[in-house]
Amino acid sequence: MRWYEVRPVRFVLIGVALVGPTAAILLSLLLAGHVEAGVALPALLVNVVVAVAILRMIQTDTRRLTDYAEVLGEASAPVPPPELDSITAEFIASAMARAQQAWLDRESKDAGRAGLFEAVIDQLHDPVILLGPGREVRRANQAACRMFGDRLLDRDLASSVRTPSLLEATDAVLAGGASRSVDVLLPVPVERTLQARVKPFRTPGEEGPLLVLLTLHDITMLKRAEQMRADFVANASHELRTPLAALIGFIETLRGPAKDDPAAHERFLAIMFDQSNRMSRLVNDLLSLSRIEMDEHSPPTEQVDVAKIVRNVAATLELRAASRKVKLRLDLADLLPPVVGDEDQLSQVFQNLIDNAIKYGKEQTEVTIALTAPVGSKAGAVRGPAVMVAVTDRGDGIARTHLPRLTERFYRVDPARSRALGGTGLGLAIVKHIVNRHRGRLIIDSEVGKGSTFTVILPAVKGVATKREAG
Image 1 (spheres, rainbow, N blue to C red):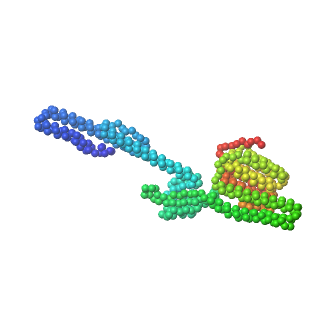
Image 2 (image 1 turned 45 degrees about the vertical axis):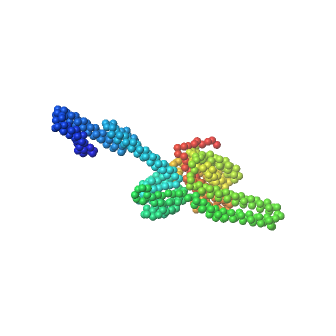
Image 3 (image 1 turned 135 degrees about the horizontal axis):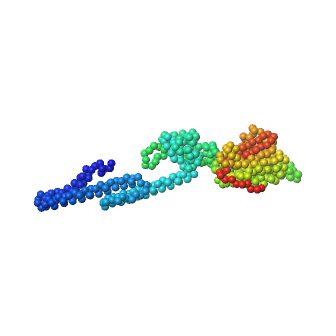
């Protein structure tokens, strides 16, 4: 029920106000004898009819204006004014329409600004998370959802982030403490270090509960750079000491006792050349490993043909294999999907694996490089489609006690043999870090006396397969 329906007295009073003056004048004239009853009564009747018509028009316009106001309150688009009988009501309705349009314009601008801010926050490279008073995740940008999963929203932060120091800092700020900064270590899929800033937050102009704004900044590269500097100094000083000592010793010999001995010159210079090459390979491998570790947390984005890469690498190693009387055999599936990867780094992976197979395989044997597209459980820890490259040699094999440590820097099963064959002890470490960057998996299987198989499993592009080229 509306106000004009529950309070009809107002309309009666308006009617009296309209008819009253005219009725009083006619009654006075009638009593004074200036007007006859036959004239006064019809005039009074006309006045009443006009008053009733005016009241009905006012009531109708009022009802239409009220209905229009209710429609405007719920409308999200401009609503034209209704048809009205009085000019005054039309003026009122026009003013209401203009007010609605102005309100819609302001709302559109506010929504546009809010949408822009939302888009900017979503496009930020760093994760941003807004936590409620119960530590529940109220808002999270795309970077946060990519890092912790889409199920992050509307759940306790502890269900997605299990770092005690970060949860303690969040609870302390929610309890009224000052802003805090803590380091967060994410071990999977690749170990990363994040700097988390925890700040108290309240919506401007609102008296609400205290919230927390959590921002995370990836400082993995900084941490790795610090670690790499320390590792490089430690490793380089250790590994370079032997060839440097040999070079210094031979130089002193050539300048002293063997100064006039041509045969000694020839022999010592050859050894010095080998030692210099060894140092050069070591420095190059250390620098390569450092670059790979710097980029390990950032997966590649380009699509590459693994079969083509393997064929090219095998072709470059044919002469080396022939010098050791080893035959390279390629076994490629007919259809292989492309891999999301870095062509240069994958070439480095297969160069190391095939070169190792040639180096440690027995003479007059075969090195097999098999490429397949495994499905289901055969794809190992890689979800979805994958490409599997298995490099098998027929060498002496490796005892199982050594397998877990093969990818460690400078770890050698037989140090003397490795150095004699020109190994730096960094090849498999480089392979491991490149495979990690590609979010793949390296599997090592070996049996003493029979040989070893190094298998690389790489995530492939979904729904795409390329036919193997001839040759």
